Length: 379
Ligand SMILES: *Cc1c(COP(=O)(O)O)cnc(C)c1O
Image (cartoon, rainbow, N blue to C red):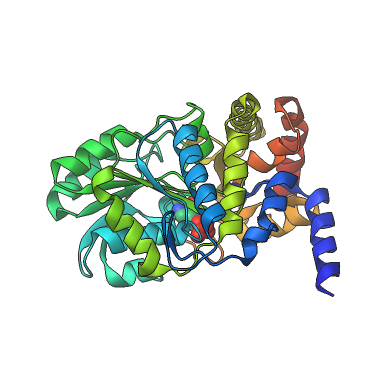
């Protein structure tokens, strides 16, 4: 039964035009590593400091993956490769650096932030006092003056930057400056744009931000997992927050697969891939604009953008379902200053990492845009 479902999902994925901005297709080499013998090994602790015997090869693996991560992001920041996912990585940073009740600042969810940036439905919102910053009402781009003013007013211990649904370049340097002026840590969560940062196609927070987290399964095209980078002075606290703070044995098979994806990201064709991802997003959003659709923040600098459905008079669920019926997979998404509920918001999010892995180029975008526009405009 389960094998049958695995086969069915493979077929579904092959047939779909996948525009979910956070998804991708990992290589066969990544999948092979995921199902390797490392899946059977317990390795609580860190290289050279394990609680179980038999970890000589595991130690070599984890050390190598850490050094690959530093190479990919051109950094000598300390790195932890054990976090089970992006959510745990962020939680570990808060656990390491904040006390319950402390104040931190993050981007409002409906303006593009992630749940783990302090939303009340998550543990992060339960344990800490969260102040949200926003995008500007007119430009729908980050309002850095507001971030600065809120930071001065609330004196947070940490400011988190980064987003899950923001199509414009983020000025990490400015946010670091704002954070450090009020004595706060700056955590840059680059989950969505990590590949662009690694290949120099988006300004890097390394060198300015105190901590940087990223998932490994989005544009980075690896297994589900995460990396936490930090300045050396914070390394012990971060490592302890992951193990034993939040996790037990690391998933060594995932860490091996992260290693494979990092090796792939060091190849010259990975930068070409990231460039095409951006070109595809830009071409697709421009075509949709020409077809009369409203794009949040009037376009994109990265791999994704949002369509504001309000002028079309349809809601996110309807748009998502109509597109799915035509084999185009997107996700409904809140848009800035959305009055509708997150269960049925007024936008959809569109990303190009997955279709670019499948070989689509900017020449394919006019046809795809026409298809999307026709579906969304047809009552
Ligand atoms: C996806 C994402 C996460 C969480 O990652 P999971 O692996 O789903 O836990 C955290 N932060 C941002 C900005 C993300 O986009």
